Length: 160
Picture 1 (cartoon, one colour):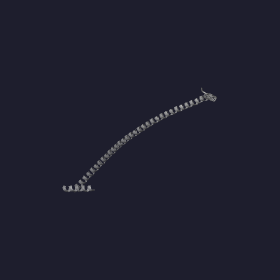
Picture 2 (tube, helix red, strand yellow; picture 1 turned 45 degrees about the vertical axis):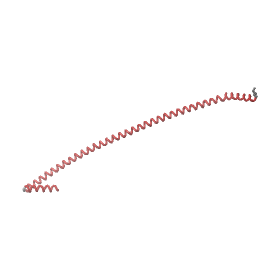
Picture 3 (tube, rainbow, N blue to C red; picture 1 turned 60 degrees about the vertical axis):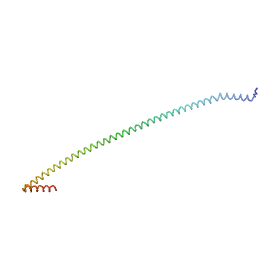
Picture 4 (tube, rainbow, N blue to C red; picture 1 turned 90 degrees about the horizontal axis):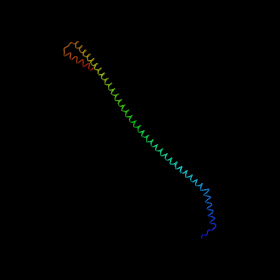
């Protein structure tokens, strides 16, 4: 059979007593500490997951806002281009209208000046004819001489 000596039994008994004492006083506390640490770790993991999800949601919102801002700025740019084009067309139309009004005014003024020149010419021609006729009557010469006199008078008057 087995030879068990007393020392071995004493060590075994000490071990069992020590095991029960440690189990009674320390394992419960150590288990509580481990459980608390596990809960803390799980809470931190949940908080980190929530923070990451909030960060992702925040990033998504910011990306959506950025896309909306880009679309809005593109719309503003397009509106500005359209308004500029309409304004330039309006300015061109206004310039055409002004130019046609200026041209019409210039034509009217030229027509008035021409009419005035025609009137002056007619007055002067009438005056010349009267002067020539009076010279002819004064001289009372023959037809050839009368014709020469009128032509000479008109040449002299045309040169002056």
